[in-house]
Length: 131
Image (cartoon, rainbow, N blue to C red; front, side, top):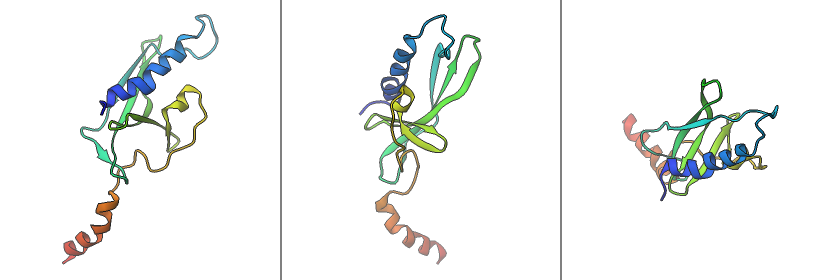
């Protein structure tokens, strides 16, 4: 098992820094941020529908103007597997999307929900609550 911030650094921040490092100084292309800061939004992991633990995160970046752009990248990380997903338009994609790779959206990740084992007994608990 890896820590959430280690997984984000390894799967997203490090590769983004490598990608941004090859840019010409006097280029007219987008100037990458100088600093990226990771914030873990969840105080403790939540479980998705498969019972896998995840944490949501946001990355703030700071450019040449020293202005901080909050939530420049948002997503979630699965600390047990080290997988990182980024959010775009209400969907989640593997972190490789931001590195220029073509990847498909991944369903049922980064969404808290009842585990399949507990959802089968959820109706019984609801019935007992009504009685």
